Length: 64
Length: 146
Image 1 (tube, each protein chain N blue to C red):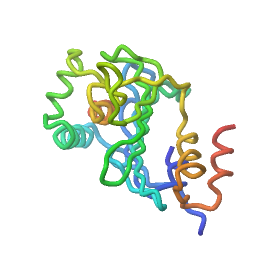
Image 2: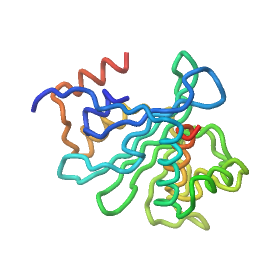
Image 3: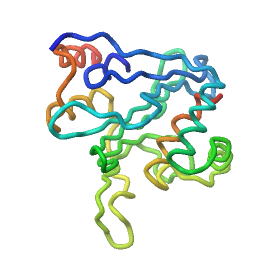
Image 4: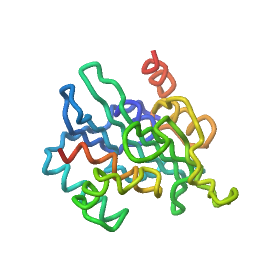
């Protein structure tokens, strides 16, 4: 087993972050990233409502 | 974070958000927050993301999920101090299909202290039959903890 270097780090632009948020909101929750953000900020979605809500909510800062 | 993750996976880390002290945290997300396969007989997966704030780089939220390949999450360590959830302290969800009165165990917030990514890596290797990818993983974790 060889000693490895650290993993690649990618700095995302807000546009790339918005795209990632949209992709994952659609993949895991079946809604757009914008709809997720709106409902999250309105307090309509609880991080513990279902397993994948927290997974998507963690992406919000990437989208600016 | 990427250094600690390199003990278990080659997955990339996406970084973004605000570096300056502000209400918007700085986010580190492994592999788009998807579950990535870990090496070992247990066929586990791992998803990792963290938020940080301020110049002192204080952790502000985390999501660590250990899953079984093709079966979804088994354990989910959450800390989300903001939001609608009534539980804002660090907690664990055990995704077991067990009913406790009117609640399902998977929805129960099992209290924990603040969990570090280093704790998750130790758990995976020492108790969950995950094979580390680097021979210096214990040294690396100890260095990160000090």
